[in-house]
Image (cartoon, rainbow, N blue to C red; front, side):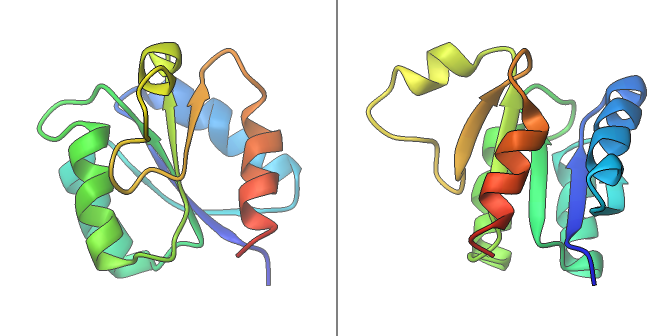
Length: 119
């Protein structure tokens, strides 16, 4: 069975692009969420193997969502996918719950495959 990935971003076009990349590698996108609150609900329902989470979203941002998701399923890797990766990486540690920060200009699929290699 392919790994199940949850894609969380408020931009529908970006969710489609990410879905295409993930599925082209033979992985399954088991669901999509439009913000952090939606992500919490989907995590409980879908039990994903990996979560790709945008930073800036309405209702609940990616950092707050990662913190809550990590409490629900602490063993699921969370990739924070953002244009602000350099700022987040400059800190001493990653935000709570975040496994890795990936810049939107980087190769997301390679990071997904690396993270799933340990699941």
